[in-house]
Length: 103
Image (tube, rainbow, N blue to C red; front, side, top):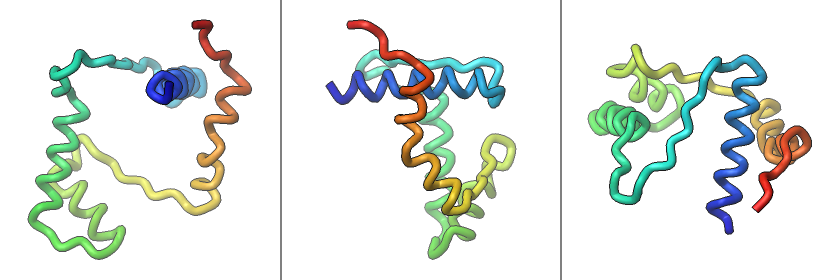
């Protein structure tokens, strides 16, 4: 099923993040239905608050809206097109390094 495939891909990605040295520890949460208020949700709500009071017409104004009231928790970094293109096939690269779990 697509949900299981997404979880497998995310698990592989998080393993890679630690092994590549981008993080020393990663916590993956599988939330119980109807109990979905976690840190990610709270940060997303903070982002929405910053965007409600501004007219956003371009990337620069979006970045400003996202970071103005959240500078201590959010850092926006834009990537160029060549970097973005490398990420498009990232799942294929993950599959080369990590096996799928047996069912």
